[in-house]
Length: 197
Length: 236
Image (cartoon, rainbow over all chains, first blue to last red; front, side, top):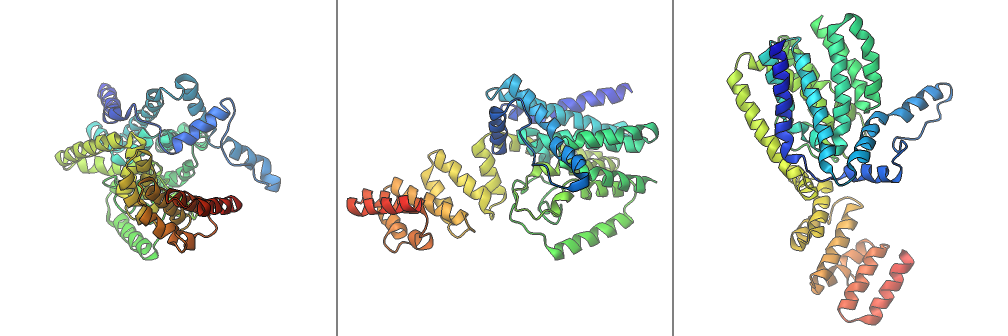
């Protein structure tokens, strides 16, 4: 247990270390769209598609669509109210915290199959892999980071089984409030359980 | 995922920046599926689980998307679960090799961060990693022009003169504007003259007509310039 906690601290440190040189990075590309929308309507939900006319199931679908990404934009609004447009460091720090959280969750997931050091090496790969740069570095990439928290948590619950299954719908719901990529969670869970059966 | 946008280097984390123009290839799909099925059949546990997490991850959703949307590498973030699991498995046999890989990847990430932390660096890297795609290229050229690097921007815009609509028109407008700005009026005349390429290709473009007016004004042909501005106004 102490070893696990020590490794988790090490992984968090590593996640921050590799992204430290981008902590003051400029806003780029889609980040400006987010900022503009927040400036226009800082208090309300300003994103997301319009509700669809779908007859009987309309209310449910409407609600889902309206709430889509609302958690993500809540984090943007929080950063906007605290840091404004000038202090980019705060925006990037939120991203890095989410990335570190994901790295720790990946460690927990891998511990189901591997001893601590092998799991830590796998989680380190997740932490430093260059493919994660866009998510961890760019503000608009936060959607994938936030969705990842719920996606990986859902997978961990599926592996634990038993009463932990109760949490899976909650993680799916909050994942939906972050990004549509959570739709792959049931597929990933089913395939995982089929392989480890 | 592998077929559509991420087939050219997910292991190295490059060439992923922006790939909006790649269409799924049927032959490549069949080949990758065959390799995947064969690998899954012979791979031991938990390597097969790693392969499944690598392939059946959120980026798979975008393979079915036909919307001509710009795709970013952040959508492949959760694909890394598979990489992590495979890495853990390999580290049980060759930990030194995986640690070396870890160091190399860390260096690569730090290098990418330092470039991606600015808007100019972002588009420069995007263009570098997807040299045959017009979107990162044209955005990179616009950034160069904004930064005052006119000659480099001009060189890039010329490459996109034959790109699909509306990029060709945008590129042409920038080229003409840069020729006028750099006082290369002979070159501008080839594009904006009476039977100039820009005028012939985009006869209804108000912006091109306005640029023609600016060129004529720079050439001292005031009356003709006035007429060109009037046409530009009519065309909007």
